Length: 240
Length: 241
Ligand SMILES: Nc1ncnc2c1ncn2[C@@H]1O[C@H](COP(=O)(O)OP(=O)(O)OP(=O)(O)O)[C@@H](O)[C@H]1O
Ligand SMILES: [Mg+2]
Image (cartoon, rainbow over all chains, first blue to last red):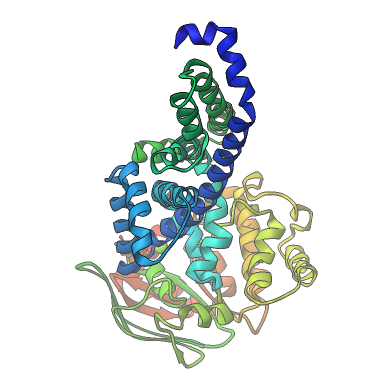
């Protein structure tokens, strides 16, 4: 593998199929965006539910989070892939991947959102209630906007993990960057070095700027706003 | 306007209100005093549904306040000013003042801003419309909170120790605003406070709470001149130095 990375001939063979990788990279980016949108939506809904005064939504949210966090993502992806046709849902591997990864990270983001909501002083929801805001309106206009600032770093952390975890699509046969790389390398020319290196670099190019930005934001927040920084530290402690 | 009928409230096994009966008339300025833990806050919070009595009834305008109708009933009848201000830190002063009118009362943004500017003038902070709460002093924040309550244009305003979290030198600016409000005949004010000078100036009636009940009530003069209970005398002796 190492020799291949140093071999111009191998690179030439690889580069001839470069467009295939670019296209698969596009799939990975697209899947990441779609799964992130799903995960954020689920995370907000279940995060808000888990801070409800009522037992039912709280328990439903708890069940979702525990079920997802205590089983492997790979298992969940297989189950979705194999079980959905039985209930009459026909989806391509890529779509199944979006759902599996979105639902998986939705559970983690729900925990981030819950911790964020709970870090907002009770006086805020009391003030809103005293003005006549309903629970959902209070969340929408008062609590969640304040939460965002504090939970952004753990949220970015989740985004990075989500991007990496879209590679689970390879296991169920969807043509994302991971699968294309593996496929290309193991069929035909037996050239592993260049494709795996490039595959890694491409994932890195997506994730590194994000995580760097998240870390910078966190440092700035802690310096600028000691209260928010302290809340963030507590949230991170609780989530880890 | 507000009626509490045999209100009991327990937190777990701790009974905090032990049968409170109280009627607040329309336009009345009622001051509640009493030692820490006597149930003043809980009483006031029962008046706007922040607490629901364990037993007994609360009526606003002859409508019983329940878990079901509290949001709607409170929205149209009462506002509250808290000890800790509780301004929304992510919004400017103007944002704080227009949030409920726009989202709850269906006012247009410009209409809500006109009303907000009017009440900012009442509390003397028209130049702070675009400031964020964190950049204001405690006294200024509390005046904004009062303006926010006024923007809902409800007949009842509840105050829970509005000056207790303030530096001594800013207490007066908040009290001045409240004295001004008290001049409005049609606003009903229920105020938990230990500012007896203020109470003397504005209160129609003062009630003294002790251990979850109303021990004594009367005019401010009554409390200054001849409180009936030894307990009341003790308490007043402490807060009047
Ligand atoms: N949410 C709650 N859960 C448990 N106990 C509570 C709660 N709210 C109030 N209490 C208790 O009820 C008692 C009365 O509280 P309340 O806040 O009404 O008193 P207060 O007269 O306003 O006192 P203070 O002058 O200290 O504000 C206190 O002992 C308090 O600890
Ligand atoms: Mg109190």
